[in-house]
Length: 189
Image (cartoon, one colour):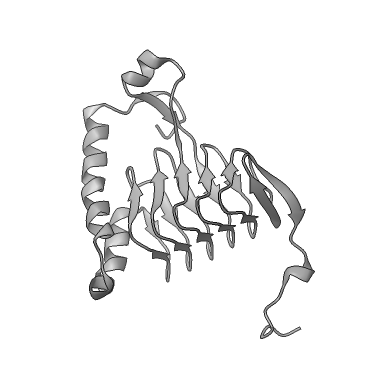
């Protein structure tokens, strides 16, 4: 799975891992405002690494959890779906919009192999300070550069460099992020 080779997703050990993680994500998705103190402990039990001041807003779903790394001060908005059949690495200060999907799994075109549960996976990397708008889809093997902005509804099928704005299906770079984009009036010049 982690080597990017074909494997059987229906193998008992794989099914068991997903079922165990499913129990955790279902419990996490039931968290309410009255149980927020419990939320961070649950998130840390689901994902491999959960950075300081990171926030995953429920509901949240992932296949295994043990392949997800979330950096410090990162926010994953509600209804995130992560198919972490390989590593999903999210940097520091990243924003993942609501209903976004990070999909590491690759299914074969061969219907018989697909019906048997054969699949492989590739790593997904989201750079420090990247922002993915709502309903963004990231496919296997893609890296999004630091500080880049991905427009809502985009389908990211190829690597995106640092410091750009990219949109569309398929997602494409439309421009660089420049000094003119800095608007914080509190920041000292």
